[in-house]
Image (cartoon, rainbow, N blue to C red; front, side):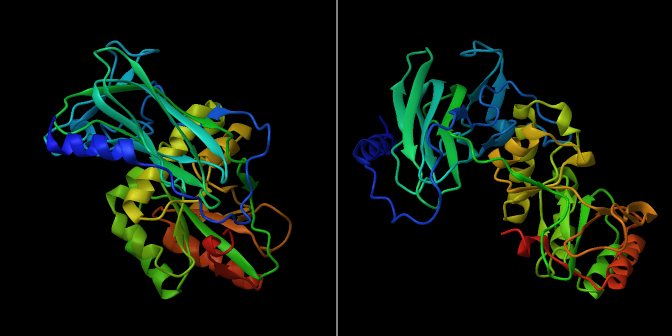
Length: 374
């Protein structure tokens, strides 16, 4: 056994949980709440959404990318697929991980079926130190690893991980679970409840990025809430950083593929929202907390899927100033708290002045949604 392997085995054996921080006002799980599996794509059966990163594992972030991790159909534990990771070099453990939204002060059970030598399953960010579950070898068969953790008073998400160990060869993973009560569903809103004389400019998609629109935003110091698709954002991340540099601006979640989520089951909706969250977090360093459903199409599953991905609000709008339009979907002028829809298109440089003029006519000033949805 290598020196690194011996050291890790010893540290895992000796690791014990430390005392939890003092409790805060964060609510605990509701007693008797149903236990569900909160993992995204737990059986590796869901296909990547359209416009997803090529070679990525849906719902998962693997350090070695497609060079190490792949979904295979050879002898899964159940279903038709499992994850197989082949560390590319002696310095890789082949880790794959995902962010799981949880409730504070709540106990969860994490488990996975694994095959290989020195495979580990654990969670970080729980608010306490938790020893991973691990096995020295499964002797070529499938073996279930299980660990439990109780979240601290401030924990809203944990990082679930599985990995092998240095120079121990390939390993496989299937049927991952994070079992416990789900977060409360996200709140659906088309406006922001406030008495402040403010309006909110939101801009979707991101395929057409013009210097004229960027200049207007900068010249007028406009706070913008951008809802770009991950592929569009990845094509020019510096553009989105510039157009959301005004205080109050932010970059939020709009799904991966811009599909009508109301036509998808909950697990696929969760994949769309969580994968977009992860892509935008990698690009911009901050996790979104607001979800804009494509086509404004959503249902009860959307609210739960959004919450499972850490979204607090599923936001539509009550005015549309895209592509030359000036539609306010209630009588009269814009009102305090109204959310205005626009798109990153070649007309945005003229849509923005028209929206700003409508806000001025109503005595309203643009503000950032991030400042009002904390």
